Image 1: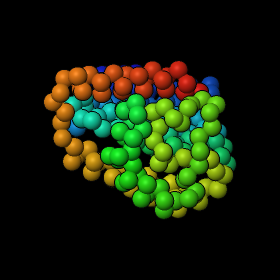
Image 2 (image 1 turned 180 degrees about the vertical axis):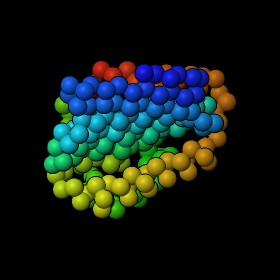
Image 3 (image 1 turned 120 degrees about the vertical axis):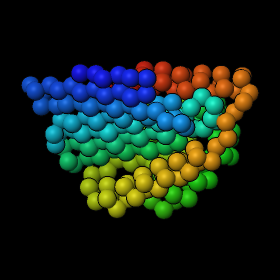
Amino acid sequence: TSYPSSCYDFSYNENLAKGARIVNHAYCSDHFRKIRTTYYDAGRQCQVFNSLWYPRDGYNLPLLGVDLLAFNGKKYLTIVDYLPVREREEEHSSRYEDAMKEIRDDYPALQGRMSQKFYDENQFFSKQMLFARFEDESVVWEDLFPAFRKYVTAYASIVMGAEEVNDGSERELLVRRQAELDTYTAKRDPA
């Protein structure tokens, strides 16, 4: 079932035979053209929370990307990042990565490296992403949850303090790069 509108979308699907359901929400605001959240629940076997926050076209800002996965209550994978829309890392890092680094430095358990199996961490990912694979559930509460809250709070602060870009070609670049990120992840996402 889907309930679309210009700024809000909701969908829910359930597979009773597999014991799984998926819920999608999408919102917008003055600063975000879209905030998409997806929750997949197959019970203890697999749970996935995914969210992507797209700033409005007039803001030269990274996207906020979140992937939190749990498998059988034994294995966990997490990625939280400010996804750069700039093609050159230094154009991103000079503006946003200092705030991210301070948070990341406090959580060694979330300083892992992404494998090249699905994604190239040099494309659309920052050098300060929170990344971890772990089997100890306590990492969720002791490291991931507080770091996640700090990342989102810092991101919201960056967004609220951003100034709109008035240059038409700059705005076009930002829209194009967001579309390229969507295409890139759609081709590589193992889900």
